[in-house]
Length: 221
Image 1 (cartoon, rainbow, N blue to C red):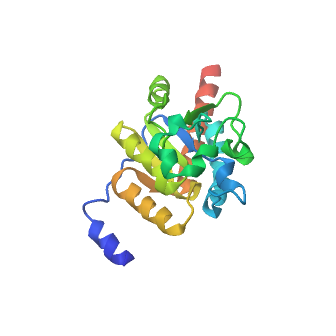
Image 2: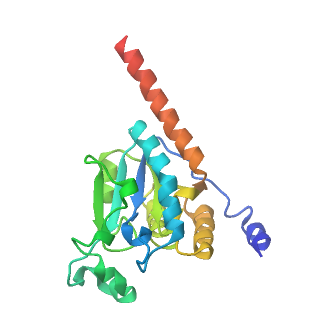
Image 3: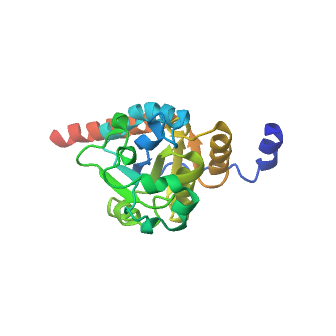
């Protein structure tokens, strides 16, 4: 079956968007709701993605690549969740003061890193993300987070539609089950961005850091 799927896409859905010049990392909803055992949203795949993302975020910081976090949080009434919280009632629990709504400690944002609160799957919908990226002159989005089939995919689709190079390091995204995870990585890579190895992104960030160090040395002469 997988061979039939691959051959069906060859020559039509196998292009690449590549990296642009100014990347940013979007860390999507890496919250304790997905990494705390006993939570209805707990997913081993997300726990793995959190672990894999530590190295990538360190490389981004060395390269001074902006990191923007997102998390889902609602008014206690749920009025800002619309039909989404009706479809997924557990989301109503994600309110101010709820520990499960907070970002996993292993990837805690620094004081100078932005955390965007969102109400729906795409990081773009109803948020200031586009304005922030424009102000930073960003042209490439490195998407990490969860879930692959939900918020990561929605953000990848919107990212392409807004004109951004979309890059997804496969080890740094996770889902509740391997089937939707794999299917959506395949679909993102076919239509909306490039799914690549984490090592490729880390190497790209390390190259940016090296160029910055070299430029600083030359400026100091």
